[in-house]
Image 1 (cartoon, rainbow, N blue to C red):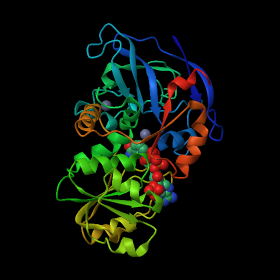
Image 2: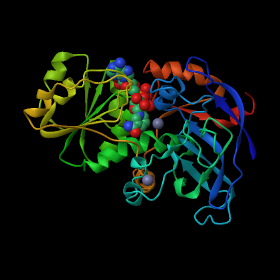
Image 3: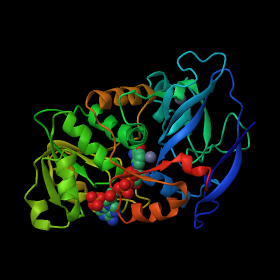
Image 4: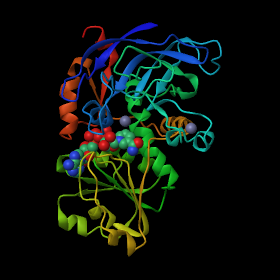
Length: 351
Ligand code: NAP
Ligand code: ZN
Ligand code: ZN
């Protein structure tokens, strides 16, 4: 076993604190990665605080991981020591169900293995532990190649925020001539803006934070709507082909359904712990669609990284040391991050 250190939550109301644990020795198909940077996703907070149901403590969060290959197993073909790689939200899946065979491991019918807080099939009785840590051992099928030209720390958030917004924008064929809305300018929302803009759509940001309007335009928005202003919202009625909702807390979804054209689609990626009640008439009259989308498959994640390299897209980040993580969580909850915290994992040694 490999000794590892990280930061873990020990309970729903405990602050994250240093934690020592073990990783498995790399098997024939495994890649051992020294973690350089890890992004801070709002899902880390939902999980660490048991907002989506009881977590398996201690939990080391973190599923926006980039680093350098330190060792490879005998059967590993695509990676060698020294390569720059990434790991996102999944570290395994059944590989035999219809979804896995289609490359949609995130919809694995037998349940994929999350990067943290899931039973670890390779270490029975233990749970997977994420990227707020020194190193990780991952099957080669779940390791991504990071394009060399991109700034490494700013690539980390692509592994969750990037793919979670790319996948629905790509699946619903967003492109030129379409009016697209992005709701919420946080980690996911700012990647959604950049990617929808690069896909050629006319993009509107909906925000509760008037102070983010200038940034939104810089990040790719053609228009900004302050969602608390009813008049501004009404002026957009029935005008959108597609809206991507990236909001982490309870809000009125019907206000956004009303902005869709006939046959338009609202896709929910934000995952508040409370239900979002839908007024059925918002859907029935103009035949609108309300859908959801979960991260993205491994092949699609590689496609997204290559798309971002082609379009020079990375995340806008605020770099922190690991001992600032609890303060960072409070700022994320207060919608006060521009636009993703990334932990410099070198700081772990001093913590
Ligand atoms: P984040 O950085 O905290 O961004 C959320 C944004 O939502 C905020 O910046 C804010 O934007 C807006 N917001 C927050 N509270 C609000 C409220 N009460 N009413 C209206 N708007 C509010 O979070 P994130 O990391 O981007 O994640 C967003 C959500 O997606 C989380 O629930 C996360 O768990 C989920 N998620 C889902 C997937 C998936 O596969 N579907 C993957 C990753 C994350 P403004 O200031 O602009 O209003
Ligand atoms: Zn995430
Ligand atoms: Zn499967």
